[in-house]
Amino acid sequence: MRYSQYFIPTVKETPSDAEVISHKLMLRAGMIRRLAAGIYNYLPLGLRSIRKVEAIVREEMNRAGAIEMLMPAVQPAELWKESGRWEFYGKELLRFKDRKDNEFCMGPTHEEVVTDLIRKEVRSYRQLPINLYQIQGKFRDEIRPRFGLMRGREFIMKDAYSFDVNEAGADVSYAKMYKAYRRIFERCGLKFRAVEADTGSIGGTSSHEFMVLADSGEDAIVSCSACEYAANMEKAETRNAPACEHADPRPLERVTTPGQKSVEEVAAFLGVNGAQVVKTLVLLADGEPVLALLRGDYDLNEIKLKNHLGCAEIEMAGDDVVQKVTGAPSGYAGPVGLPGKVKVVADLSLQGLHNFVVGANAADTHLKNVNLERDFSVDGFVDLRNVVLGDACPRCESGTLEIWRGIEVGHVFKLGTKYSKALKAGYLDADGKEQIIYMGCYGIGIGRTVAACIEQNHDENGIIFPIPIAPFQCIVSALSAKEDAVKETSEAIYQELLEAGIEVLLDDRDERPGFKFKDADLIGIPLRIVVGAKNLADGRVELKERRSGAVELLTIAEAVAKVKATVKEALQA
Ligand code: 9G3
Image (tube, rainbow, N blue to C red):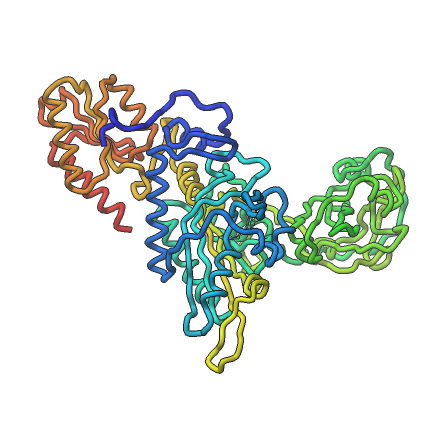
């Protein structure tokens, strides 16, 4: 490809609305252009990287025995009504009507569509297992699309769905996908971790997220310093509180704490530390009030509470509900002397606590020296809190937990029978008996993978593409392209690389060297051959490796050979 005849609208200045580096660089490198909020044009350079990731995904899915198909982006509402999700999803599901007033949605995912296909086509156990996948545009009407391709509204996803005769079979399919995902992200040159994740609204029994480690990541992930344990913060488990030293229960004491509401205020006012103050959170679980008790220095993990209560919605209660449930304004709630019956769930961390402070369910008043059992009882002790740095690992005896930021690029789910039951997708077993199908589903964000790769591979000059997903593998920068020797030599190198199957971009523009070098660094092409009159006079060209910045003066043959060898080695993985 000749730069002068291609379309790479690079820009110098950083766009103001871009907040993360991958978004900034993809705009500046002429890879994407915004059409509307969360909706992007993939320009030629961006599309080449997207297609590289898709090719790696396709190879590994095929290697794992999955079969590619393509489902429609537009889905009939009937299937979503049958699965019960038409009502469950709100504005994120983009709905519309056709000319005959039939209801449709823009597909955000395809469990219903693929299960409908299977229930019509599969009747015998002999047809299972099967794993169907597609690489296709999804639409989710995110309330706040941002970060470019990282959180778009229309995005390309590879989504796969496995169908097995039983749970054991589904576990085998899951393991195959898990292995394929590791290969995919390794081949993309990403540093990633597979972490245990919450199954969220999709339902099902368990799931893993594939997280690319990046400080700009929206997700907090937790990993053990000693063993393989890793989990999304939403799911990361804590251990029972260390049985701290036993203390004799001291007499209960009411104390006036005017205007002291937060843990910090109350702790300071009473001269105790935050861990001696127990916070009482009033929440609504599917509209029902519930009290969650946590040690003051910990934070509630609402997903854990939601999963424990088995409710669909959970939210912090407003001041009016707090007043009604506790008889006091917000900031003074406590488990002692509640006016009425309300469910009280305590975090495990309370088990080791004695003589602690709680709200007195009266304005400007707290209770000191409160003790479990003597002063109040709870409906259960549950792991309700977010882990904190240094917590003991819940899986091994020696490790402690570290906390990272990550970008979710893949997510694999064991779905069980949630969709096959709802849509009656079954099969006849060897005895002719009707059985239910066990499913799994497996997603990868294609654009998000490119963006995450840039988050992990850039410097102050721009993108540093790993060879496997670089839009071009080599750029030939012809300096002072007017000079015949330079023109002929760069053309010859370009042709030789093309014939060798190298994806090469020839920068034949009539621009100053510095201008060309800046563009080459910005768009992140891994290898660069510079053809300049001075070195050429000595029969030399410059080979620069973008990542290390290493520059070598080589003969043309050496430079071409080195590019071929470097590319070959990088794709060997
Ligand atoms: C919706 C909307 C948004 C959604 C979903 C449904 C996420 C939804 C979860 C999944 C699970 C897996 C197959 C590929 C991998 C992920 N956001 N999810 O189901 F209607 Cl608006 O998509 N699906």
